Length: 307
Image (cartoon, rainbow, N blue to C red; front, side, top):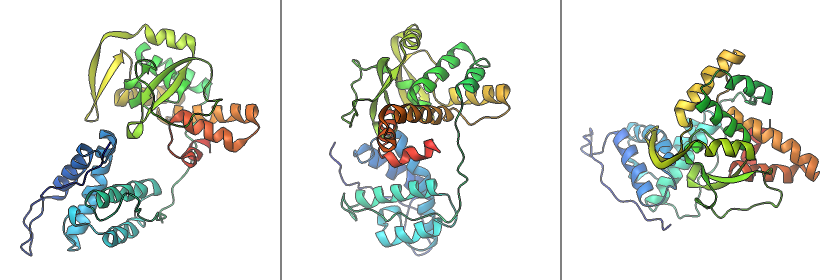
């Protein structure tokens, strides 16, 4: 998809006579413009960047640096250095990616230019979010059959909550062109889901579980809205925020704690990594395969799941 530069005007009264839109208005307009111009691959990324851009716009105004469309690489670096003392690494990285996208959209960066990665001063507490098979089996006993099926699917294929909306047989929704190791996936029926950044990735669902999923196939696809994003769903199963909330409540009822539905992705990644290390005798290649299966763009992201 061709990426075009973004052009729009933002206005709001200011003390020095210049006019800019409110920070929130700037953030919404710019993130939407970048999505519409093909610079952001998914609507989810656009919504994610809005919070980062709103805070950056407020900082620019306080410091007399103008609007978001006037952002310079120097100002972006200064802002990120200040943010590094206030937020964790994940938030700081999202802020950097959002500002980098703005600089490219406004022509102040080429597509190859990148803002430097800055380390957050704030220490993150890194703990495993893993569930054992025994634990999530207890959780589904406290869910409705519809949500329990989604929990089994998420555990079996390492799915994100919103990806449950997008499940389709691979012949109906071909996967994106991505690297695929020959040992990728356990035996099962191949489906695809739409993940972060619009990546369509292949997943494998055990035969018996796939048969139960097909029993919930809708005669006609329906549009479901979750966190302002429209999804086309072909199955009547739990997904998105509603499923996540169901899982959290059921986990607390069954186990007296919750690591959230995302913990099932951690569980899948850790279990598959152990299997693949035994099969391949190569820890790094095992991580590479797991990375491909869960849809990470960079294998090092998978380290978070394996701790």
